Every structure is written in structure tokens, then in C-alpha cells.
Image 1 (cartoon, rainbow over the protein chains, first blue to last red):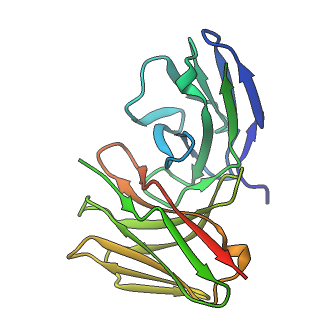
Image 2: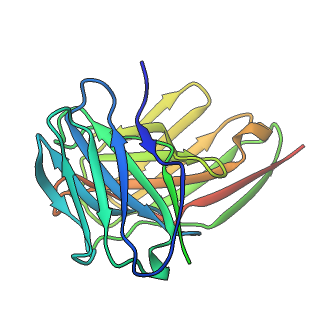
Length: 113
Length: 112
């Protein structure tokens, strides 16, 4: 079975632009979480979605938004990009979103120039 | 607040045992996790331990949990060069859905 998939692999944007990152969870998993990992740090929680509803939100500005689709895939949107948004964006899926183990995808490397 | 702390760097010789330590703050955490990250890659789940356990062994990996001191450790027996990576300790932050709170990671370097 395929694991968590993310697209694109790499992305280069300029300040002020917006970006959309995509994630497909493991088949049968209904919950998707997004994390931001800046260089040299551990991942920081951004959002969790379960059954298309936001289950949790981390300490990120309103420029960050996400949604989950009926097929459980998810998009993370970031508006008005700043240099500090440059990071590896990780998506994780879990079966029910109730505290079970989360399985991570390979990530999308975003560079903001 | 929630915080997970780890030592930043560990260097061992091939064949030795490695011990990576972690302290956490949320005493209500139900599960504690160890993830491995190789350069340029995502996170690979290594193992996890439920909070009512003291120890869990999985092949070369041994996890020890001291709930009183909020201390978690990961022991890798017979460390190989392929074990070189960054290891993250993580706890569940119950105050934000089921978010994982990660430490900054321990870089394990294995020399032959």
C-alpha cells in the first residue's frame, strides 16, 4: 500500500505570493495533520483535520489555512509569503484523528526568495 | 507550557550501543514517540510507548520511560552506519487536538 504522498516535492516562490501544498493520506486514514519544519528545528504543528472538520490549530497566523476533501486528501494554503515561511512542510495521516500514531509523508520543501 | 528537550548531538562507533535521551513536560501524554529523519526526507516512525509502560523492546530498539521524572530514552543496540540520522522524540499535546510536540532532534553520527 502507498504511504502518505505530498506534492510538489520542491517549490520556489517570491515574497508576497501564495502557495498551495497537497497531501494524500494512507488509504483508509481519515485524519490529516500539517507540520512546518524549519532548518535545524523539530516539526511544529499547524493544523489537524478529521472528516473535513478542523480538529486542532497551532500557533500560526491567519495567512495559513487548510481544508480536507471528501476523499480525505488535504491542501495547505499560505498567503502573502514571507522569507520565514521557507521550510519543509510535512503532512501526516492517522486512522481516526483521536490520538493514534501519525505517519508522515516525504514533505514539500518551500523556498521563499 | 509544553516542551520536549533532547541533547543535540551524539557520536558513536559502529557496533556500539547508542542512547538518546528526551525529557517532556505534559504528564497527561498517553503516547510518546520516536521518529527518525534522514537528510532531505520525511519522518519515519521508529517506535512508540504507551504511558502505562516502563519499557518496550523492538529488535535493536529499546525504549525506557520514567514517568516520575518525565524522561524517555531510546537505545539502539549494535549501531550501524545506516542509523546515522536525526532522531526526534515527540509527545501528544492534548490541548490542541492530537498534535505532536517534537523536540529539536538529536543528530546521531556513526563512524566505522
